[in-house]
Image (cartoon, rainbow, N blue to C red; front, side):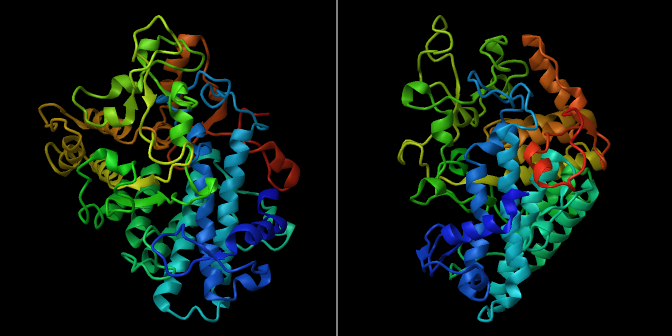
Amino acid sequence: MLSITQSSRRSFYALIISLALSSCSSLLDPVPLGIIELNKLFTTRDGIIAAVNGSYAPLQALYRGPMQQLTDLASDDGWTWRNELDPDVYIIQANSTYNRDVWETHYLGICRANDVINNIENAADLTDPVLKKAVEGQAKFIRAYYYFNLVRLFGDVPLIVRQIKTRDDAEQPRAATKEIYAQIKKDLSDAETLLPANYSGSFGLEKGRPTAQSASALKALVHLELEEWDQVKIATEGIINKAALPVNYASNFNGTAENSPASFFEVQYGGVASATTSILGQSWSPTSAGGQAAMLPTDNTMNGTGGGLSSGNGIVQAFEPGDLRKTVSLASYDLINFLDVNRAKGSLLYVNKYYNTVDPRGQSTWNYPLIRLSEIILTRAEALNEIGFQADKEAFELLNLVRTKAGLKPLLSSDIGGQEEFRNAIRKERRTELAFEAKRYFDLNRWGILATTIQEQMNLSKRTFPAARSASHPITGKQYFLYPLPATEFINNARLGQQNPGYN
């Protein structure tokens, strides 16, 4: 597994992890202390904190586009007219760069988290018990987050929880999905105990790091994925009433309410280097404004034209009239339709959620939200309904809390008469509330309806969803699509085992 060998770790720590933080307000204000030798890095407080900071760095690379390609573009929300349409039309192969980049970047983050967890006792001057617990809790939280993504994308993957010192340490067989989830849950339970409820802002305790509530929120999402409804209820019990939803929906994405109590975890952008900024605004903005329009929102008025899966259950039509979130998520900018000049000006919509005209082009400093309060509210509502439908009770209140904030009327039992109707209402609300936040693909997959949903789009272009690449989920039993493990991993790791179904 070349991405996490000793040479990769040494190169990384020489270039990035050797930047430790002095007292500052942000994770992205590093003060260079010079190159730290790898064997000395973990022997000091500053080295350990620099290492845990480095475990977050892969998130910045992942959410500049690679994760969205495998999720938003592969869902019924996004499509592309460009040549890079492999995820859009489900033709990714084992030798594709799409899955390889995501795989390697996740394991790089896991490796760094393991380094912290396995060496924290070696830092002789890390004597502050609050700081020490926070560092360990962060490493376990971020390791759980990375594995949660990997197991949902690839199924069984190597479970590496020890520091990589030799090639043999890295070359591990695929662990069963159940074993991976057991480790994720253990890490998050530990993180709940180790992490503080908030941060003081002192060295190593800067705002923007995951809290105990972050661990509970992520644990709730894990239980949701596995349909462990009672556990979702327990995990969300103490966290949804500790903050209010932002008054302005746009503030979740435009840098004005970053790391607020209504946000449990974010990718921390905001640095001055390209690697610490986001390019989503440029990637998805109009070509006439210097952007790439690399992913467009699905729109049923496209009637299947454009090249990719442009239509069928379009996200444009999913928003109800009067939904305040639509103009935040989508915009036409009143531009000429470059895909069809015969259509009216302003007829082509773009993803507007991260469009940034304040920062330099392609260097947005706005954070990217990974777990927001509204998602956890809807998560609890979904679980309560699955436990048992109750007309106009708590699940309704939670659903309506999100709806009314979006300017929509509350739904009552006179509108929703039973469990299945409420289930569909929750699914619709999750789609519009969390649009283009790398959520929809995972939702469709865990509900077991990804294939039928995407096939609706494929019908318009006479394509067929690759059903052979789906398998029965080992825990929920739902039909579950899996991406291929990178072909290079089978060359580098003779112990990896079999490829996912449908890619041989």
